[in-house]
Length: 233
Length: 233
DNA sequence: CGGACTTTTGAAGTAATTCAAGGGGAGTGG
DNA sequence: CCACTCCCCTTGAATTACTTCAAAAGTCCG
Image 1 (cartoon, chains in turn red, green, blue, cyan):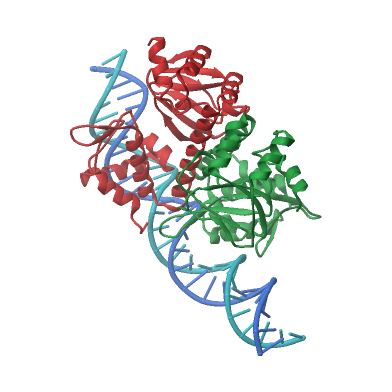
Image 2 (image 1 turned 90 degrees about the vertical axis):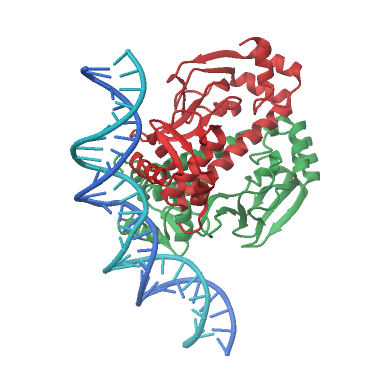
C-alpha cells in the first residue's frame, strides 16, 4: 500500500474525514505503520493507552474481560474506524483488548501527537466528539436491550446490527462478512453459546437464517426485524 | 445567582474547565439561562437535539424508554456535568429523556453556538472528547456487569457507584444525596424493584446498609465492596 | 486420518421474575 | 389534629426463561 493510497483512505476515516489534503499529508507523515496477523493483539486491557490507531484494512474485535475470565465483546472495528480512543484524551489505560481477526493494517499516533493534531484542527476534534458520542449512544441502546429484552430479541438485534455494520450481499441473503462463532454472538448478546445455538437452529428451521461453523447468513431480514421489535417480550 | 458566580462555576465544569477567564466570559454571554422545577423535563427522548446544557445546581435523571414503556436509567447528572451531549456534534435527536429531580438551574447553548465555541477553543473540544470518552467507558463497564454478574453484585456495584458520585458523609455512614426508590435502583441494575427490595432487606439485616422510603445509606463500604467484587458469582 | 475446536441437543437445576396481597409513611384536606 | 389517600416498600408463593451440566456429532486443518 503506497503513500498516496493511504492519503485517500485517511480522508475517508471517521476521525480525519473533512480535513484538507495538506493536513492529511502532515498527519500521514507523523503516523506509524503497523500490521497484525490473525489473532494478534493490538493492545490489551490494562495496557497504558499510549497510542491511537485507525484501521486501514482488516478487522479487530474489542473485548473486555472480568477478573474471573468472563468476557464480553464491546464491538468490532473495520476499515476507517478508530481503535484506542482512550489515547485521544490522555486516559491512563485501555479499558479493553483489541485483537485482529485477519491480517490487519493500521496507522497509529502517540497520544501526544494526536492531541496536538486535534488542537490544531478543530474539524478533527469535532469528528472525535462525534465518534465517541455515537459509540456512547450505541452502548445506551445495548444496555437498554440487555436490561429489558428477552434473549431471543437480543440475539435478533445483535445479528441485525452486525448485518448492517458488516453485511455482504450474497445470492441467498445478507452474510456477516467475518467469522462469527456461537460463542461470539453470546458474548455480544449477553447469553450463552447454548442458547444462541438453540435459537439459531429454530430460526434456521423456519428459514430465517442460514448458519454454519462460524458463519451466519440472514435470509429474511424483515422476519428477523419483526422478532427484534415485537412488543410482547 | 449573579454573573460572577456563574463565571466561577463555569470554570469548574467538566466541559469548560481550563479555559481562560476572558473566554469563559464570552461563553457566559452566549448562554441561555434555564430553571426547572422538580419533575420537569429538560428534554424528552426523540426531541430534536438543538441545545446543549450544563448543570449549575440541582440534579437530573436521564432515562431511556422502550416503545412498550419499559425504562432504564442512563445516569444522574449533578452540578458541573453536561446534558444533551448529542447537540455537541449535530446529532439529530436526544436519545433519552432528562428530568429534574429538584429545582435545577442550567445554562444552555444552541448546537450551532457550542460547535462554534469548540472550533475556536480546542481545549473545550478536548474536554468534550474526554467527557464522552469517560461516559463511553462507564457504559462498557455497566454492560459487562449486566452481562456477566448476578443481580446481587450488580446492585452492590450500582450503589457503590452512586455513593461515589453523590455520596454525603453522615454520622452513621455514606448517604446517597438524592431520593432513590427501589424502582430507580432496579432500573439502573437491570432488575425488578422486588429483587432490589429483598436484597436491601437482607443487607439491612446484616447491618451493611440502612434504607427507607427513597433513601439509601451505606454503613459498611468494605463489606459492600466485597460483595461487588467476590470472584464466585 | 488424527486431533482440536465448534456446534448441537437433551435433561436437570435455579436465580430471578411474575403474581398477589398487605403494610407503612408522608402529605393533604377536612 | 386526625383521617384519608397515594405512593412506596415488603414479603410469600408460583412460575419460567435461561443457565448449567453432560455427552455426542460435525467440521476444519495439518
